[in-house]
Every structure is written in structure tokens, then in C-alpha cells.
Image 1 (cartoon, one colour):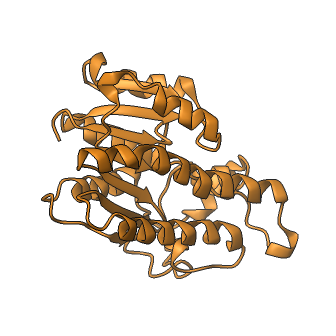
Image 2 (cartoon, helix red, strand yellow):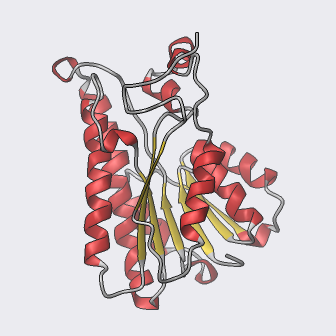
Image 3 (cartoon, rainbow, N blue to C red):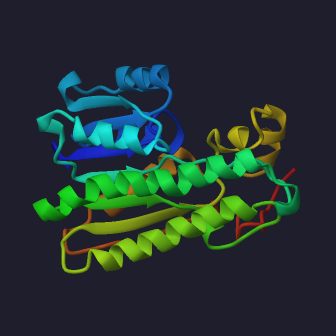
Length: 253
């Protein structure tokens, strides 16, 4: 992992920030991308690595032209990306589909599907050309099991699952690897974002349960990225012990 270039989207918090920490500790060079510039800078300052091993990008993955510009204009020493971690994603709302908010739908589709596609499309050709690379997509248990009110969010994560499988097939014959890491209940800003900043409602999601942490998921991502070059971990589903499915949770209240 020493001096490999790792590109992480949604790096300002949660799983993205945890990935930055674990890969930095292993000696990787980091391209950290997120919309929140101040949070990115705070993360960079907290990492105990030389400044020349970190490159920050204020980037909205939903903006295709911005993604194209960001990748095209990377300094030459940062262009040869070894690992792409497509982590940027979100959920908005928990409404029945027939009562759903169009803006919530657009934001989830634009970020979870189109943003992932944009980054992949602009970075993977270089991996193929260099005969080296690994794409790690952050999916969800929601991509495997739907739940009431999850409709569009579950649909976007099912798309991530299908896109990951399709990309693996399209890359057959190259050494480029593709992995989907699909967590269950994990305590990040996820629920606060879903409920539009309603902190009290977000807390209830994790009440009586010990959920996964961002570090737990980052540890699994790092494991997938550090296998022998002939080994591809296609898919990992991980959940806390107190969760058996998308809807079955053991709460000790």
C-alpha cells in the first residue's frame, strides 16, 4: 500500500474519513474529495502524514463536468490512481413511494448512482491502460433487501450492486479488481441526512443497538484492498451482531 494513490469520495465524514485514516496509516497517498471544504481540511490536518501525500478536492460527484475537470486537471504526480473508493452517497426521507419527495429522489439518484458512474467512467480507463487498479463501491444491505419507506434508496443501492457486477464482467481479461462492500446498520451522519437534520429522530434509529462504526467498515475495505493481486473480493455484506436483516434488529431498550 506504500505510496499507492487512493481516491476517496465523500471523504469528509463517516466511512470516507475512516478510510482516509486507515489508508494513511498504511502509507498510501490520498486524494480526498467531498463537498464540504472545511471538513476536508480538518480531516487532512488530523492525519499524521506529510502534506505531499495528500491532495484535496472540493467536489460534488453529481456534477459530471466538475468530475471530468477534477480528474483531467490532477497534477501529473497524482494521475495514476490505484484504488477508487466510491463512498459518496446518501439517503433522503423514509416516505411511502406514493408520498415521496421528488427532490429527495433526484438527490439520491444523482449521488448514489450517477456520481458513482461518473467517477468510475473517468478513472477506470487509466487503470486498464496501466494494467493495475481496484474499484471499491460502497453499497448497502438496502441493495439486497428492501424495507418499508426505503423504495428509491433501496433502488439506488440495488443499482450499485448491479453496476459493480457489470463492471467486473466488463473488466474480465484485465487485472483491475472490483469490490462492493455492503454494510447494514452503521452509525454515521446517514440518519441525520435522511431525516433532514432531525437529530432526535436519527438517534432513535440506533436506540438499544450497538451498530457498526465507520472504522469497522473501513477495516473491511482495507482488507479487500490488500489481498494478493490475483484475489478479487467481489462482495462483502456486514452487519452488527444485533441485526439479522434490513428489518430484523434486536433492540435492548
